[in-house]
Length: 206
Image (cartoon, rainbow, N blue to C red; front, side, top):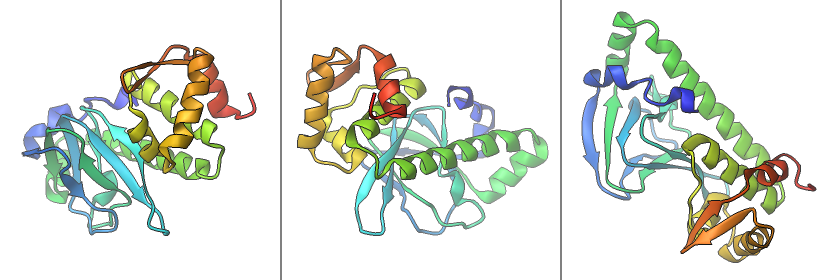
């Protein structure tokens, strides 16, 4: 993902800039698309609602990334996006994107690469839903670490990430703490040793 960061920055003048307060819903899963977005400052959580009505966080969007790419040409959004803190966002309508592509044909590949990355992430999340909780936790921590350079998250948020209970998450956290894979600073989970977590993410029996 790091290679995608800030690639859309040259085209911000074509977008509509707006500020959003904390916990602002940017788009809702299933609603008709209005275009896509670029996060300039802040943080966005991407959530997926299952057919059973269970909502889980599937991604955290850092500054410099597009999000909601699937909502072009009035296609329905596949997920929901909500700010986790005050944020500055740019909105790109279908018309704005067409203008960008006309003047900068290479911009289409930036959008396509970002869309492919999001679809791949979504497919990985779905494939892990029935996996052991420890494997899911390791996968998410490694993903956050590799994408954002860190993986700080409190246990309550982590439980929402997994669609699990805080008690279940805490059992694994305490095990990893004893094994010196992670440490806790306040309510934050800090990775100390990424290698064994990668092994668990790829093979839960490790």
